[in-house]
Length: 173
Image 1 (cartoon, rainbow, N blue to C red):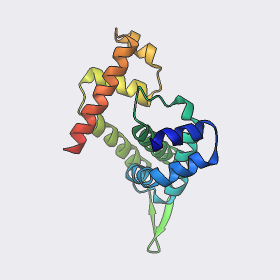
Image 2 (cartoon, rainbow, N blue to C red):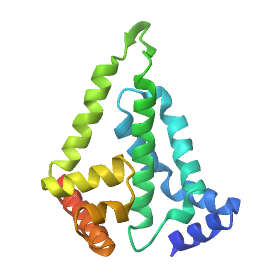
Image 3 (cartoon, rainbow, N blue to C red):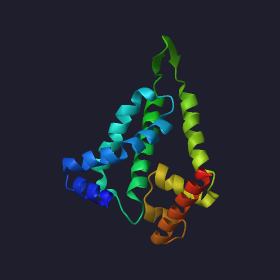
């Protein structure tokens, strides 16, 4: 019920909606960002703010038939964090910790991202893994992927839903 109200306020671009969103989901978004940013802790606050801004800007793309609001928020936060990692891979970042300077190796971060994605998708068969990569990582639109795999669009979304459920179940074990 509260999620519906938050969505309604944000769609109408009322500040109360973003305030309610932050009150209810700030801990969840921070947790998702923190777990996906890894060693880039100095970018956490900025990434969290960008995640909330992305929710505000893209609320019209939220579809209750495809996902729950909470999961949609988590996906946005996760991919914002991954994008931050990718963005800062191209630079060597330095951070001072206990007055020592540590260099974040871009190859290590790239490997960490790749391992994280592989860890998520390892629970899927190869066809589902291919579908997930194309849809979630490469941004290919659903009808194109469905056609390529000889599926109807509704079957495609059902496959995504079953895949997400399978991943959630395996991760919770």
